[in-house]
Image 1 (cartoon, rainbow, N blue to C red):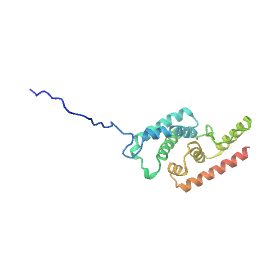
Image 2 (image 1 turned 90 degrees about the vertical axis):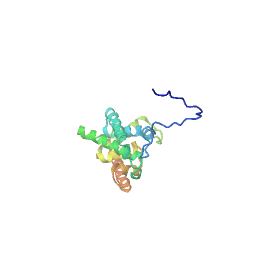
Image 3 (image 1 turned 60 degrees about the vertical axis):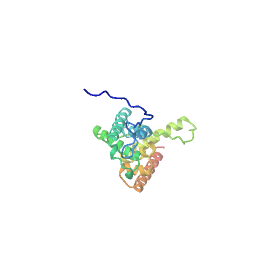
Image 4 (image 1 turned 135 degrees about the horizontal axis):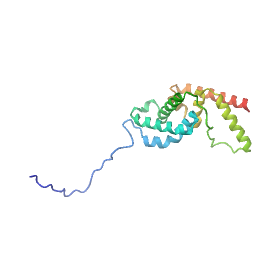
Length: 188
């Protein structure tokens, strides 16, 4: 028969290890990325799809894809946000392909730095003009406007999401903004 086991005596400390860490081997802190980008990803996807309920589903799908593929993140290729927005973009485009229809802007992004409007009617008129002007842009330019002004990406992140150089992203954005201004002037 086995000898009875004796308890340890004289133990003064214990060693504890975390069960898991929030950073993966790729250096990606997924929880922090999720908390910092979820609202921006949702706003971007909602802008592309024009449908809030579909945007919720696509946003969840994008984060699920990102979580499953977090080991593929490479810091040398761009920021975590750019990587995530690339995944969100692909998920939204998959949804649009599934629907076989083009995206429309649901609402313009809020301008927190703007001066208060003198007149509610004037503000409403400007919103209508902006929506109409954005609707005249081709889908790729609408996407650029949404990524820059709705999701708040900088040109380097835009370049990573779109798969173009930083200077090309800046040029494309500049041209899209010029077209948007011209279209607003025509609708005014």
